[in-house]
Image (cartoon, rainbow, N blue to C red; front, side):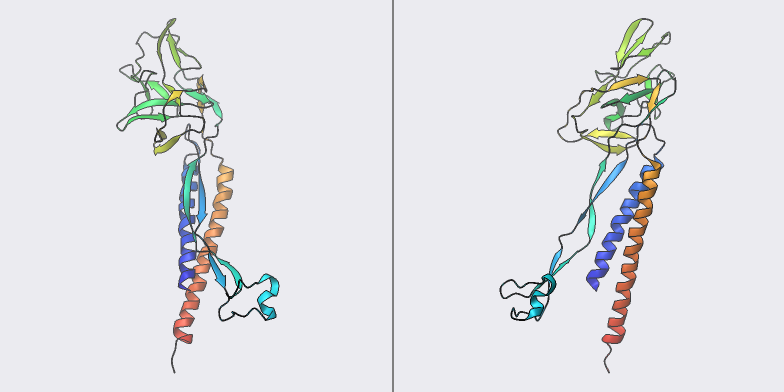
Length: 267
């Protein structure tokens, strides 16, 4: 019975973490360039069950409905699950819809690629192309972090820059000349990056930035790839699984109460 409590509780803890992940996806459904997370759940190695006090192979019951005897050992009954745990939370790097804004420095990415930005933790990467020209002429994101060029330097937009256009590979043109090229990178075909927070990513160990093969769309923004309907359906299902675990805990608690107060009572 104690084992039953722990098994049910482990499932409830797993579903609590699952709920937190879904809530984060929903909270960022309108976040530019956000990529939803998905969870992989693993089961602890199950325990093999056998009938006790039944080591005889000469009775019919030992072969009843698939039960069988291995040598002199008791017949197998089945397996007992020992609970679950979170195996991995993976980011789903599917393309988000592109939304037209018409703003000069709004850049949407179609296909693989990340913009490089300068943060207190070093160079980080993002799909959020909500950029603007700061008071000192620097190209920055909404958090005030400098957007880096392909050479790893902050990008300066001159005060007299007119007719600013940005090509599909990130080259910035103004007044008929090229100013800089935005750092536009990818990390292999499998997006070997890890979420850091604030819609930023850091490369995984051993991953090296390469020139992105995606396309930059000026005057557009990539929206979140979160589907509110899908997340809500998953959330409802998650609540049902959690409720089942809660009822299992209550059942185990009732059995323990009877074992202690009724079965264990001495006359």
